[in-house]
Length: 149
Image 1 (tube, rainbow, N blue to C red):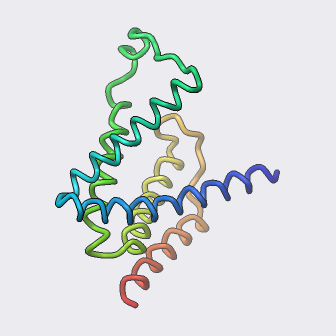
Image 2 (cartoon, rainbow, N blue to C red):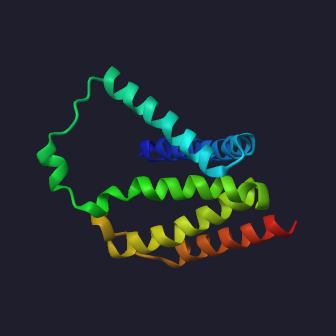
């Protein structure tokens, strides 16, 4: 029972890292004179870290047959991550970290609720409820308040 709360707390902490990452990447984009260069550095360093973790953990690469059998649309996650990081680097100096993250989380919650409700991408179904809708509306109201004041 408590595991759910512990995991939610971990997710909360990881979410906090997005604010730090966005702020650092935005500063890096200014120093490199282009936000896409900062995004490239972000993913390059991340790839090196993941490679090192895989080597340290002795995780083998999957066989070519396994990779070839994966539907192509499942590889777009990296592209989505690149779009998100690049957009954050561009938008944070213009609208601030709180507005950028609040709005992006609002968008995530809207799409996540649709995915949950219909069970897209083989996730377990969690029907949209009045409480979920109210939570999303309050989140969006929060973004509007953050932007105005």
